[in-house]
Image (cartoon, rainbow, N blue to C red; front, side, top):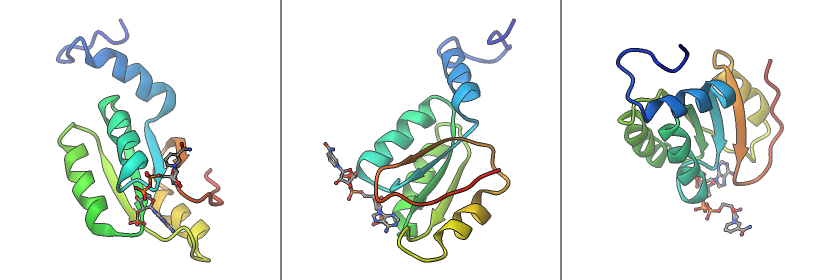
Length: 114
Ligand SMILES: NC(=O)c1ccc[n+]([C@@H]2O[C@H](COP(=O)([O-])OP(=O)(O)OC[C@H]3O[C@@H](n4cnc5c(N)ncnc54)[C@H](OP(=O)(O)O)[C@@H]3O)[C@@H](O)[C@H]2O)c1
């Protein structure tokens, strides 16, 4: 029965359903602190893999370590949403990820994903 896999804790089963429906990956822009980091933590607890975008790599990597300890995959994208190459930069950095959820808690940006 779906969600009854051996080895999964009971409280994990709801997380699996969330991740299957909205993931398996989420891209969060403005993720390194504040609202974006809080959103990333909430999604990680639900089993969603995180692509974390902000300009500064240090805070992104610190958060990534915290989230990986929760058991999810994390990729950091140290990119500036104000740069002219942002659309291609994000596309290149996420081309192998099945991103089901996109959130930007900072400035909006153009992004196309297959
Ligand atoms: N509607 C409301 O009630 C309400 C309440 C609070 C906040 N807000 C708004 O919500 C947004 C987030 O608030 P917050 O408190 O979480 O802000 P914050 O703590 O300043 O975090 C902003 C995030 O965006 C990243 N960022 C900023 N400029 C960027 C750029 N050009 N490219 C890529 N990443 C960039 C920052 O990382 P880096 O610096 O490393 O790039 C950081 O991760 C803000 O726009 C704020 O005005 C709205």
